[in-house]
Image (tube, rainbow, N blue to C red; front, side):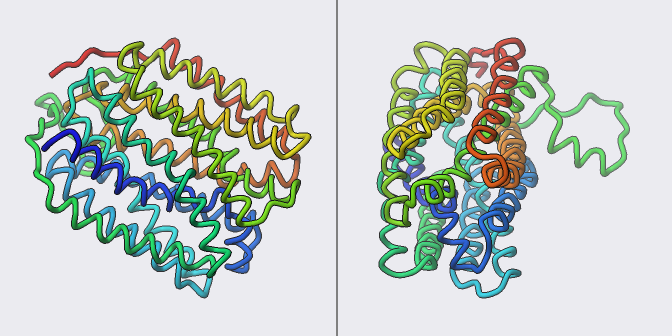
Length: 396
């Protein structure tokens, strides 16, 4: 498989999934009104969707044994079912079920896609490849969410969900036509260990057999950064709509602005991270995001500086998290699928909490509490990476 086909196909599929993943961030108040819910209530259901990431390591263990493509295809179809259900929902239970299905699918898709691509690329090219795939996150804001804003204004909040479901089904067939790979089997546990069956199943999902401290520290640091960013992302639509009166269309335009910050970050990763080092890049991203969170309350005096400082913090977060993926991918290569999905699960656990805390902090205590809470959490992430994470050279 050529580099161009691998990256192009992966980027197209991830663009669709990323639009679905981010759709609630700018349009949370609009969709909540359409569903007959409050911002806080829908934020909690978005948190429920993220909570489905707890099952992602199961998909990683399956992928390490049976292949990434079959898991990727199943994840896309599961996500499609969830988005279709959200698009046609008329009762709360349909929204809940749609969130559960889409959460299960998306939490399995992204880390297994990253593991699939990582298995195809040498370590010294991995940040370039994964960074290019993450252009999809930026393009989501530049084109995807902007289009969603105009589509909602022209039709209804339902139409984007239905179109996303169709796109996910199409991409599942595209991945079915891609060639598989030779997989490295995980290192088995040492002989002589007698464990109950349930402990063996748990161990197969969560236990890393090599380089444990650095691997778990990398996972924890990524989750903390993700939580800090998601608190702001899930609440920023309500923040800007409430304080500055932004509508669905103008919220879509702010997503367009944020997309350029994301794109600059992803391009920077693909150009520089392999050269300067993955760990160093992660640290640069964390420090930049920390500065952004600290400055948010001081620049929240008009819509333009508020949007710009959100964009700056988001851009540095993107640089951090995209550099984090190749750093994590080589911590335990024989268990790459398991490690990547375990990282996704813990990060999505953070996003679950953020779905509760972000809107709640904003509604009850305002922007300063929201921003500085994220700053405190990302400081812990910074210390974790600096003291506990090792960057490993390619081991295969």
